[in-house]
Image 1 (cartoon, rainbow, N blue to C red):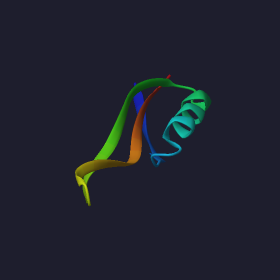
Image 2: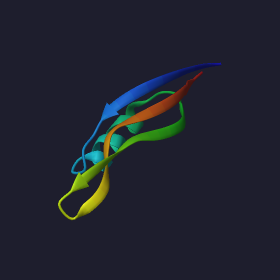
Image 3: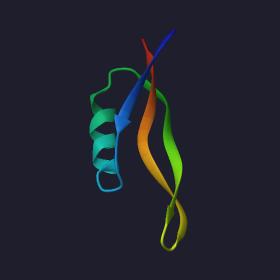
Image 4: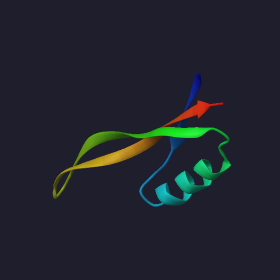
Length: 60
């Protein structure tokens, strides 16, 4: 069994469309989608931001 890990750069505005497009063009089975979440500090307090997604694909 072989696996491939893809990195998909996203932002808050285009995350859903980019992920949907990417997943629909993969040939293998999706094992996991892992977000890279980093804390940020805004004027109103602490929050988090997703910079990219790691997608684990299981190849046939």
